[in-house]
Image (tube, rainbow, N blue to C red):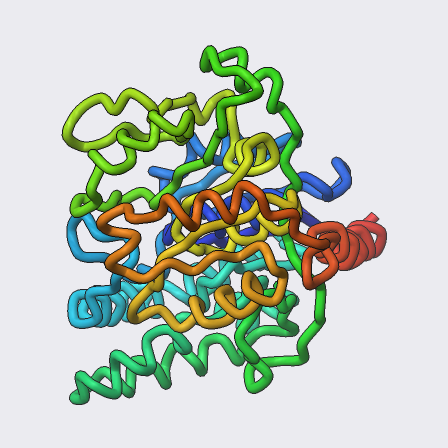
Length: 373
C-alpha cells in the first residue's frame, strides 16, 4: 500500500460528494507527493474520471454512511443504517492494527480521511498524523437515530465519536456542523472544484437555443421513484429542459436529457445551466454556490447535515427550499420561474478550501520526504 513519504487517503463510500471533495484536494497536491486512495472498489471508475494526477487505488471499507429506503434518496432508514454501521465498524476495528502496520511499513507521511473514522485510529497507532476532512461526522448523523432506537445504538455512536477523536486535526469544510469536540479545528471554507462554464457546448449538444431554459436535475444515486415525472415533462411547454446523469425510471421524458459522467461533471453542469433542482448534498450545494446558479431542493429527513446546508443556501440568497410534497409531485413551476430569474451574490464562505487543505498536507508530506532523504 502506498509509497514512502506519501499521503494515504481514506474516503467513505457514501455519496459522490465525498469523492468529489477529496478529489479537489488531491488534484492540487504537488506531483512529488505520492498518493494512495483507499475506498470501496465500486468507486474506482469514478475516481479515474475525477483525478487529474497520478494516484494508486486500493480497496477499503471501514464505514457505511447512511442507507436510504429503496427509491428515496432524501430519507434515511435509521434502523437499517445503525445495524449495518455497527457491523462494519466492528469489522473495521478488528482490522485496525493491521491497517496501522500497513501505514508503518509504507512509511506514510500523513493520513487524510473524508468522513470515515476508523483509519484515524490506525494513524494514531502508527504514529502518523491523521487529518479529518469533513463538514459532519457519522456520530452527528447517527446520534438522533440511536437515541430513538436505544439498546446498543448509543454505545455505537460513542465508539465512533471516540475514533474521530484520534484525529490530529479537523479540516472543517463549510457549510459544517460544529465538530469542536473532536480535535483542533482548521477552518478552510468550502472545499470544492469550481465547474467550467460550458453552456454553449451543452446547448449545442442537446439541440437547444438560448431561449430554452436549462436546469441541472440531480436526485442522487438511489433515485426518487415517487416523483411526478409527467409534471416535469409538462414543463416542456414553457421551454424548460432538464439535464442530468440518469433517465426517468419509467422511460424516456422528452425534456429530460442525459449526458455521460465521463464527459461532464456535476460542477460543469452547475456552471452551465440557468438553475438546479437537486437534493442538497455537500458537493451539489457548494457547486451551486460557487457557480452562482440558483438551486431548488427538498427537505431531507434524518440527516443532520441538511440543516447547515439549508441555512447556507438560504443565507446565500440563491437557495429555494421546496416542501417534500411539492418536490415529489414536481409542483415546482413557480419556484423554477423565481430561480431562473434570480441572480445570487457570492458564496457565503471562501471557496478556496481545497487549496488550503492541499497546502497543509503538502507541507507535512514534503517535510517527511526531506527528513528521509
